[in-house]
Image 1: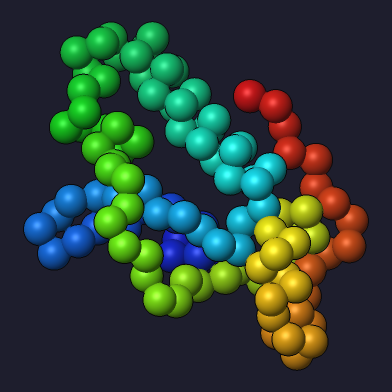
Image 2: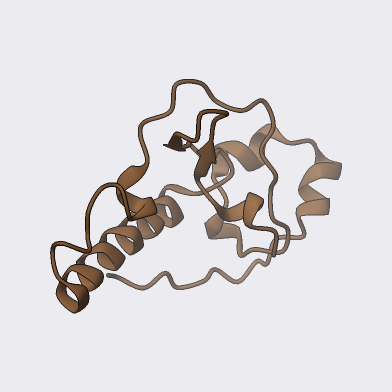
Length: 112
């Protein structure tokens, strides 16, 4: 899978990292990704110690809030319906919705 479809991190020309809003993601999937980032930081803090977990080292901690949004964002195809934002799906035409080839069976997103 193309990381551009799933990553919420963008880098500007100066090397600054930004956490971007991913418009196709459902609220449930976005919340899961955020909690997964937090769990990764916590795991590394426990395994490697607080000195390792510094803002300059971890991608999850170096990202800032976005200044502007990209005009187009790649969208992965074939995800379960509950992974896509209903607003995003409804804003697409019938052909685009068909191309997404969403799975009707929802996926169970685990609690972290």
